[in-house]
Picture: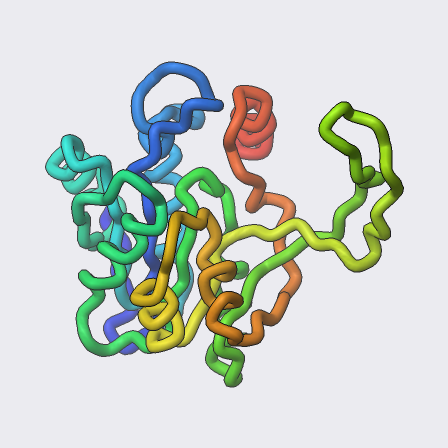
Length: 229
């Protein structure tokens, strides 16, 4: 059954899904790899569509797979599918350009974080709605972190109390994200990093353990267990 997005919502979600996912092993574009019986992208879009504030979803797909992705997602939600770029930053910019007038809160989400729950999207959107120009969900760093030199010799122990592991969706005022991409120089894999370069403050909110990034076969195995539970 196709999910109905909120026509009065103030949020658009961009999902750059054109990457190859080399670290996940052979098998085609990462967003189209299976988690259980469905592609990662389907799981991700289903959870985005369940967030009450979402009005628009735009997916940047591999150029050769646009028609197939559009057909794949049609039963899940009303999604706009555009051809992505070679780099993630280009894919986000192309997806942002396809957002119609209306939504002033833009969330950028990785299809690889396929199990991020709807409440995480709402939490990030609420923080942007409250006046924050840019918001990222984070988790505390639990491992001890060492700084090492080129030879692998430890230089020191990093104070992890000030460190955070960043997740998606990352949220922005529309004008802030548009300006950041318009001024982008080089390729960054983090939209908040583009905004930081503009001198705009980025605020953290609590992330969610289910929003893990599926990058390696081990991550896929963990996500499979989470899905089963």
